[in-house]
Amino acid sequence: MSVRERTKLGGLAPSANPLSSHLVGDSTMTFPCDHPHESVSSAEDQKTGEPSPAPWTVVISDIHLCDAEPTDPARPLWKRFKAPELFIDESLARLIDELCADATGPMELVFGGDTFDFQTVMAMPPEPEFPISWLERRRGLDSSEEKSAFKMEVILDTHPVFVESVTKFLSAGHRVVFVMGNHDIELHWPAVQRILRERLGGIYDDDRLRFCEWFYISNGDTLIEHGNQYDAYCLCSDPVWPLIKKRGELYVRTPFGNLAGKLMLNGMGLFNPNVESSFIMSTAEYVRFFFTYIARVQPLLPFTWFWTAMTTLVVSLREGLLPAQADPVRLEARIQDIARRANAQPSMVWASRAAHVHPAIYNPIAILRELWLDRAVLLLVILWLSAQAFAFVNVITPIRLWWILVPIAALLPLLVFYARSVESNVGQTAKAALENSGRSCQIAGVRRLIFGHTHRELHTRTESAEVINTGTWSPAYLDLECTKPMGKKTFASVRPLPQGGGRKSELFEWKDPGLEVIAPRSLASLEPKGAVEAIRATTVSD
Image (cartoon, rainbow, N blue to C red):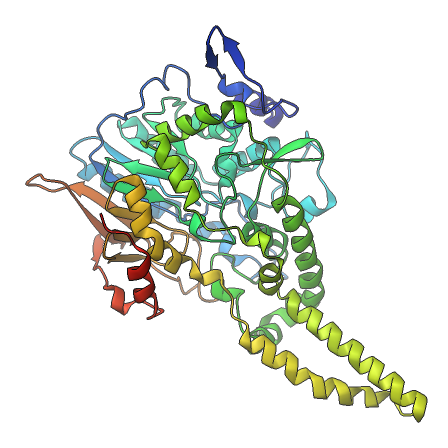
């Protein structure tokens, strides 16, 4: 079956009207295949809001499954992190088998976002059924439904072990929940959901397999989110209405951080998008890295950086400011549907949405800073002023061309001073999540928050909430050769106490084989130190 046929079966035909609905009598019946914002489970499956009991919850996030990178003998380190031999599928399958063996009843496996990495998929259909632009061929397909469906097929074809393992887990009677993150935001598409359901055993029962826009409440005591909604650079600006219209066609709005990763890092294969320190460096570190590795493999990287940064700026501003394809007539039904799949009340959906941080796209100066275009502008200003000074002096008295280096040398310290004074705000997400944990838990009516996104495992407690970060299973390495893994393969477990009276949560490292508990840390031990006071000032106690 072609991607176009799957897309039409999955939900929205390429030219379908996002405002379509079908009225019968006094009630409104919206068919999933006619509306891009709907779950693709059947109407029969959607009758019940409460899920069947699954007292043991396991949360894994940030796996970042994508396509494989073909080996290039001339550039052996180019996107080395996407080599098939580094895939975590086998290890994850062994963990899931061990969890199933230890289960004494139904359990739920929650994939807490960024399970799939749509933005790093570079594969192209051999005989495309849709138009592909020049930019897409060099940086990956856009986020229309047909193209997202194709990328989902590629990812699942590349990771058969993952598909088999999750299918086996579901066939044992357990539940799987996919919470959407910023890297798999294209799971919003019904066609993408349908493909995944088909591959995982043809399960269309929301009680067994469900998709949640940005949060899920487990057993009434645990709020599970991806965490990108606390990140101004990576949040979904409107998770209720995530679609925008470009050139007459619907697309999922891609967050700025993911556009930057796609348009820039997809063309810079020596930077690992799963490790912030590989692309967020000081000026001295960039210079050292360039002459050590890049000069031999990609000597024109400065040019690549400049045109992709400018492209990212233009695309992110253009798409970020487009209006969401909202349907006011269906707003109440949409909120109720989100709440049903998240085990929440509609009021929780409204409150949680209001608690999200403000998108950075509305702060162009911050965007320029993160792209390093502010340094580029300052450098151009220095060169222009130097040229003007040279021209002025040359009119009064002729001088040699090399004299232009004098004003450049005099002004360059300003650039160096400015560059050293600017710090990236990208790493503030973990702090923001901690600061908002109390409020988020109060909205959900729980006292435990589990999230991911930052790739830094953590188990701690604020004054009003228990907080767990599930770390990452992504191909994150500290070296280009991918011999030094960064972080641990971790997951959260929330399980009933043997004596009853609630559930106990723990953060585990999967040693493959064997498990090791990661001890909780106190807030005082976390960086930055000043975060403790901020957390105490902003969290809300019951």
